[in-house]
Image (cartoon, rainbow, N blue to C red):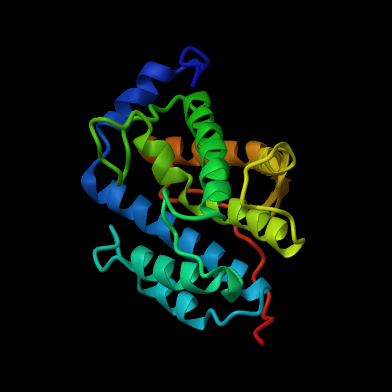
Length: 227
């Protein structure tokens, strides 16, 4: 992955703020990240007419750093219910299709997020939650979490249309590459994901600089459509 590390005019200063970020700040940022992720997962379930009130309840219970692991609880419920029952889906990187589609879509999303972080003068290596000395993109893995459901929506659409998802063919890859231009909604604006992501990464930089305490994440419209 090629990233423009010389593309930000106050990069060294931003790096310093990021490196010196306190643990309480990082825990608060992770709390916001998980709340946004669960809200977007709940919205995907709602659009499919699947019960999601428990997800909305869990969002309110997420504390700084998510010590009770509501992210894991929400993920377990979400993956158990979001796909049609006939698929008997189990989420795992090495699992059966449509895991192949999810993995491909998430890889694209990760690259987009990493580039967005660098363009905002941030080091994608230094995460707010993920830590792994072998992972050069820990922060990208953190920040992409609330964006994952946008990939899920594309994969669900492929399945709903009856396309062959057992193989990752050219037509399906093309649809997944379209994640960059999917519309995402913030409080007052709608923009393509790649553009909206810059709002997220810029807001994170401001959090590190002490100018803000909130990351700007897009939210999928929550539709009450339970069966």
